[in-house]
Length: 283
Image 1 (cartoon, rainbow, N blue to C red):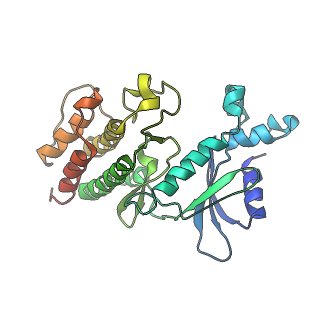
Image 2 (cartoon, helix red, strand yellow):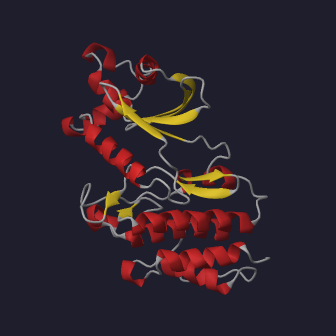
Image 3 (tube, one colour):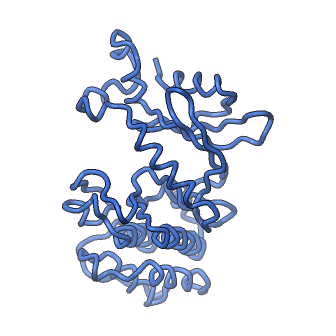
């Protein structure tokens, strides 16, 4: 038994015809769907595996996909986090018109959950690109500089993303697009637990100050992605690294952006400038 069927059935009752199930996670469901004969779009429904299990009859849960995850959570964590999804949707709507941020092009709700729709980009994400070792370094730098543009726009609108990693940098016609504001917070409001981590793309301050993370956190996470592209490895505690075939300023900015102290990191515009310069440099 797969609880995603429950979500797809409810979307169908509200006019959506499923083309493909893209992702089904603990917190949400991503569906490629069409309505009224329009081109398919990505519909993100604020109902994931744990939420569906919470709504199912107790006798059916043990046979359902995701029951293992469900057992590991507290009753509070199992609760339907509808307000969290609405927060994500509202942030996406607040970013309409922003360059290099995936736009929300429609939104709505069912009695059981909320949803919003986004364009469908067919060129994958940064992870899929990184699996192709033939891609030129300038292509990566363009995509990362675009991601820096999107993140800087978020910051100027008072939002910190807090979850920058490969899957959240989509690619559209060779350009980078920031997506998934599920972990984002407004700068004027603490959000989430005090402590999170560790994860390879998260900055060290998440261990004590996740709820109040600043734009410097996104600088660190984007620098991790740049480091992985440039050096084919995760950042190590081995001091600055350089590649003679790359601009020195780029390596220095990426290294500086990985500083443990957020105050020692360059700003997002400074990191973006280094990435953009590298994207136009022949190497």
